[in-house]
Length: 120
Image 1 (tube, rainbow, N blue to C red):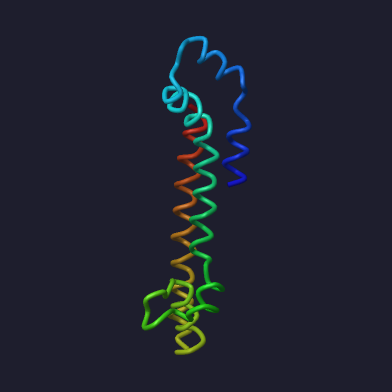
Image 2: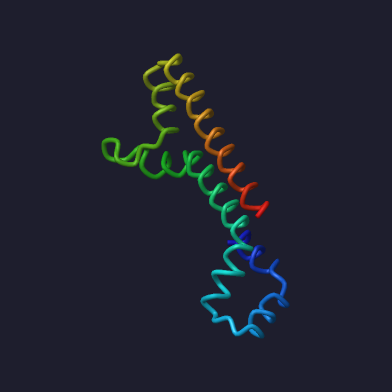
């Protein structure tokens, strides 16, 4: 929320004043000014939330330990179970490397898209 608020505060007021002089509707101001200028901030906030979702271990582990059956089981819970309950260290190491590559690759693609948006 703070990132989005910072993005909204970074838009200069004179741009909105010029749009009002040109008789742009509030809807048009949103689509032509607000959204394009805050898109990099929104994309950054989404990237941070996505990475945080992959790291969500403690809350799930403390509240449900993977849930009834495997309903609330995340990748990190699966990795912990394989490593410390089933003692499948090779499998858990491979799963950790695959998880790292997936998160790193998705973040890399997302940052390239963010740079493309910022260049517009």
